[in-house]
Image (cartoon, rainbow, N blue to C red; front, side):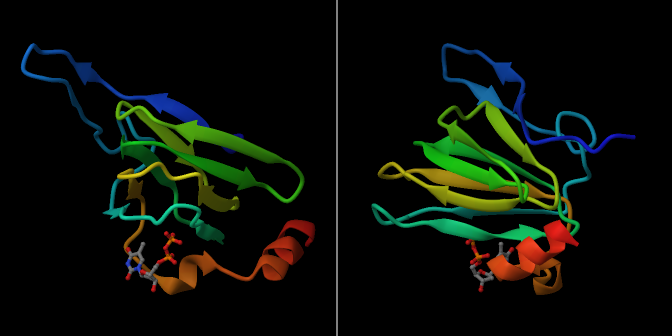
Length: 135
Ligand code: TYD
């Protein structure tokens, strides 16, 4: 099967006069089993997060509050996505160098991921990533 590319997944939305609700189920709305959830917040203006790739882990990034931009590099081209809607998730397969920037004040980046935390799954060295792409 051809590897899925990064793409936006529109999550369910339950409209209600009391407010809206969205949700995501592993292997249903999200194309993997969810093993871990983490979130990034209190990002000072101008800071950059990420700057790594994953060997195996798949991710879904959601701007649960505010907005930020995700840049994804596959070794050849960069695709950028600005997330600003709590009902949209950006699916990222393994093998993409990701950087997150342009965080608005008070923004929150929630990440659903397919593996428990393991530093062994990270490539944090850009040259190592490039070598992997070319190898
Ligand atoms: P880091 O990967 O640099 O965050 P980002 O993806 O936003 O750039 O992670 C920051 C620190 O947090 C690093 O020391 C690893 C640790 N960490 C955990 O302990 N558990 C986790 O689930 C995550 C995502 C990070």
